[in-house]
Amino acid sequence: MSYYAPTFGNVNARWYSDEKFDAAWTPECDALLEEYSGRYAPFLLAYIPRFQREVLARLKIKLSSQNIDYAVLTKAAHNPKILEEWTSKHSKLESVVRECLFCAGDFGLLDMHPNVIRNCGTDVRWCRGCNYSFWRYASGWSEDLEMRVRRAKVSAHEKRKCQWCSRGYNLLKHFHSSRSFADQGMVLTTVIGHEDLAACHAGVDFLYPNLYANVCPECFAECFHPVKRVDQSEILTAIRELGEMIGKVPTQDFDSYMYLFSSRESITAFIDLMHRLPSPEEIKARFGSFFGGIARSGLLPDGARRMKIGTMVEADDGDICFSLPERDIDNWMFAQGIRHRKEVKYPNSDLRCDWELIGFSQRVFVEYFGLMSRAAYVEKARKKSHLATRAGIRLIEIFPDTDWKLQIAQITTELNGATTWSPAVIS
Ligand SMILES: [Zn+2]
Ligand SMILES: [Zn+2]
Picture 1: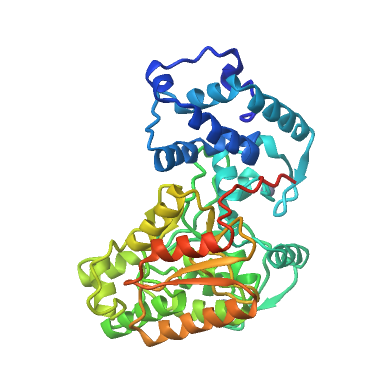
Picture 2 (picture 1 turned 90 degrees about the vertical axis):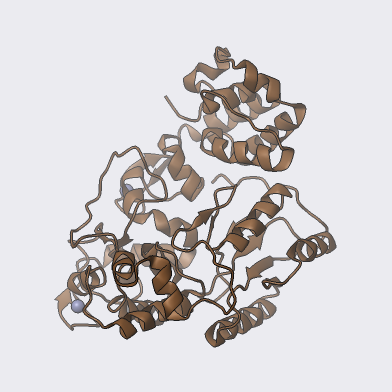
């Protein structure tokens, strides 16, 4: 049985009840649930954690239940408008089968685990098994990326020449391999059928850099070597270069950074850096803590408040933020009902904005520039401003001393204050 049918867990039989949950529920919760149904049905199950957080952020109501999935879905099944929409959207999808872009196997959208839908949305192009290796592709998905994957598949048997060591290799044997900065020199294997498909799965897949450049399995593996024999000042230089390349204070999730780049030039430069960059564990060992290494590298702006560094912070709506001020901004927008997406690319560029706001008459990007004391960062900010102007994008630039609530509110009001939700696209 599908995760996404109104018959899931027999919620349509209305057997599940929870007094405390029912007491907290208000008509506003129903209205928000109807919005969710419009956007996400039949995939409501995948968005329940988000719904719960949004009810808290916007309506200040804390919904809790022994089984929050059943509790919310029961409410949905009680609502005739939602039930009708849910049923019809579900039956339309029942016969839809897609071909996995990576392994060419068939998969049904309704068979996808809720975590995959949460990560990739309903336009997911790959099966559950392939999601282990390739889930990070979801955030930067584009026609260009799809074309590159297709081309790599067709030419997987062809001989390539490594840019670093000049050895010959092809993609066949390692098409689904990945390595991680958390490896202790072992090859990560793909575990198919594991239940937990959350976005914390570690690893950089071998295919990704090879979509843009030519890196053989040995030179790829070298990026993840646990100890790179370099002296202290070389390590600090590498950390500083990392911060400059990604335009942020790095967190320990080094595996995620490869996916910020999408040209031969930038991927090549990043692999060059990875060959010198120690793992977060090695940084901890050398400097006492990850933060210690970051601080010594000179990446932090003068007088910066000590931010929570070393872990990415999750905002109320599940967005991953790279600093506490960034999370505050994200939470505020979520509570205001301002729809947004994280880390969207500037047109014709590898650079990404912190947020794109959705539902306005003009494209709006928001940047939090927290590191303006560094020359390289100022340079990047200038470039972003130029890219935005050229593409007709309204750019909201936030600096540490900006009254950003006022700034965002003014511009969103000016652009017609459209905080209405655009309907989910189900293809
Ligand atoms: Zn597949
Ligand atoms: Zn090589």
